[in-house]
Amino acid sequence: MTIARMPPASSSVTPGSSAAERFFGGHAALPVMPEVGRKLLRSLDDDGVSLGQIAELIGKDSTLSAKVLRLANSARYSPSHTIGTLQDAAMALGLETLRNLAMAASISGSFPVVQGLDRQKFWRHSVRTAGYARLLAKLLQGDADTAYLAGLMLRTGQLMMAMSEPTQVADVESHASEPGSRYSLEMSRFGCTHADVTAALASHWHFPADLVEAFKDANAPLEVRPFSMLAAILHLAEVIADAGDHGLDAIDALNVAVPELVEHLHLDLDFLRLRLEGAGDPGQDVELMLK
Image (cartoon, rainbow, N blue to C red; front, side, top):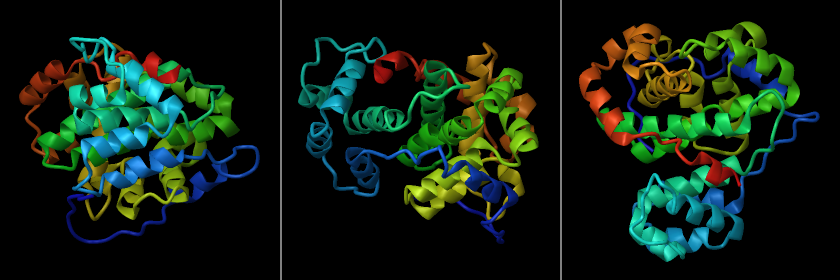
């Protein structure tokens, strides 16, 4: 997993990361990632993994297989014929899309329904964030597969927060009407953000250290050294997903919420707009993933 960085150094222990640990333990049991999900994660570092191996791995989990087949037959992928087997899905979708669908279904299935958050809205936003992170990573010469996984995971810390303090989390969501505002609202309320709690969760799940750091840095990418390109991509992707939730223009939202970050990355917003329009809605048919 390659993450672009700039000089000097900062401590990995922040007030936010310390505050995040309170959401683990007690009645908030640590979610368990299924073994197939773990193996899919490890496959990101295996350049030699084949389409057949990914399909075979998914096939070991019948529930996951059923979800992937439902998604493969959805309107977003518009198959020319009904896809009846994982092998059909592999041939129709390709390795990257097949693995991304499987990871999305596996990770979403690892978390219970919680009070304070609308499950379908939450996962639609998360899948959108993943899709936009992948798109941005390709534009910025980042690792698209890692960006997709990180985008998918970015708000999962909020589920841990809702297990402990559902009323507070619901109140934050009700006030997070401006794209990107969730971070500051959570920091003032909890002393940490969903990204901090996701970093703690990723650490408990033994994710790669650079991914854990990217989650921590996603709060304010320009304030952290060394600079993490992945953290910047995650923050941008969440702003774009927020804009979609509120029916706002994504490019306008970026210009309002993170103009300095856009300038720092030399993002061509006209080209980004074209790419976003061409990509459609990554969160389309997310309800099929949650059945």
